[in-house]
Image (cartoon, rainbow, N blue to C red):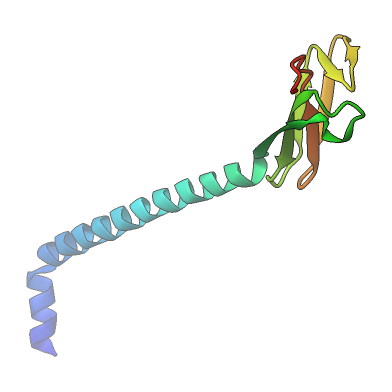
Amino acid sequence: MKRISSFLNSNSVAIQAFSVIFLVIVTLFYAIRTHSMAEVMKRDFELKTQPFLALDMAIGRGFGEVDNKSIQLAFTLKNVGLVPLIYSNDEMEIKGVSINPKRVAITLFPTQTLTLFSNLTGYLD
């Protein structure tokens, strides 16, 4: 027991230096791991707090209207995110009626869809 005590006393500076270096390495390792986990959590937060929009397009004749010769494009928008999506525009047209207020806003809640039809003037024969 005396040998161990005298060894520790005679080498106390070296033991302290080794301990400090070891603790610096462990602290550096944990700092790097914490930084990488913080980046993952930041990206996860962004994914959970941003709406995501899926767009589907179809080309057809009339889409159920009386005139089946007109060419129309149908755009279906779907909010596949976890939070509501708010779309706003200065001017838009819904079912042939032009709406021109200062601001029009459409809110799409998660899993909600909106289908918009074009007003092409071409005809198929």
